[in-house]
Length: 424
Image 1 (cartoon, helix red, strand yellow):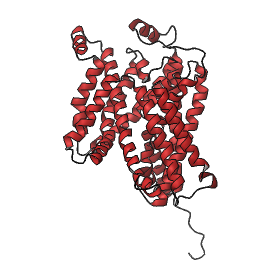
Image 2: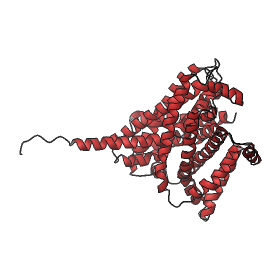
Image 3: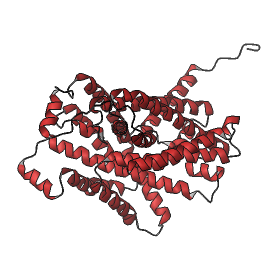
Image 4: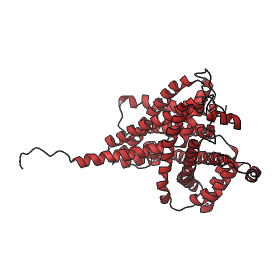
């Protein structure tokens, strides 16, 4: 009726918006928190061997999580200012078309290194599961002839699973398998927290005795809180822990191109990711200290059934995640060598990844190098340049110089110190 007060917005609309934010938040967490989180305990072990070191480590990884969230939010603003829907287009419009090859290179090298890490993880997981099964002398002898369970598993999985999966024309059927990765992270965080407090890896713990008996690496603690020479490794690994920025334009689109909704997704997604990263980092280091390996699951005894389930979840999920990341590698290779046939586009990079994985057995090195080189660029340097050069991007006064130059400085320090520490 005339003169009646305007009706309040329908509750269903508000609930639908909240559901959209919740769904996108979960997807963002899945994009951020991956297998690289399992290297964080080794990152702490690179600069300390005392449990109190977890306090400064938590502060650093939380602050870097905040910085990563800010740069992710900046990418949404760049997409809004230039009405673009890809990371490459955001760069081209804000910085320039001529230098767009930089983004293409990063878009190819980053998933290449991710696939290398996946290959190493698959080999480690399979080798641990084979050891837990206690194979007979015949199987053990056969595995020794092909370089051991780890190398044999990598080769077998590459030929039997990765090659056919990476050759698929459409990867739509693999999308539901992303739930395995989420289940793996949730389960692993819970089981690691339990092992950190149940004493089974303590001096008199049942699994500590099993490690001593089998020649495994025993937990090691000391009094060193900060060893500056190893801080670079930790900083680089923190970069990998938050690297989802190529997907920022997709989340901007999923938000309905609404700044308020997008910022809520970014805020919630990165906050939850910080919690997951801190939880797994703290649980792993509190259990194994300076002995934490590049893939912390390798620290746990092969007889530890809970660890076995975690290895199985991560191993299987990486098999199906690998071709999703590899699709970006194929696009990059095709753009550089358009005359290559489809079999060569699939086979050549896959052969190179497999060859490197057979030689490098520490995924922590790959995670650290990825963070130092790609994380510093994708998370800090490239968004900083877009913010600095993007004339159409609305900026507060402190964002005209302080914020972009601060991010550039952080990216340069992370790249230089992280790379140097990785190869030290």
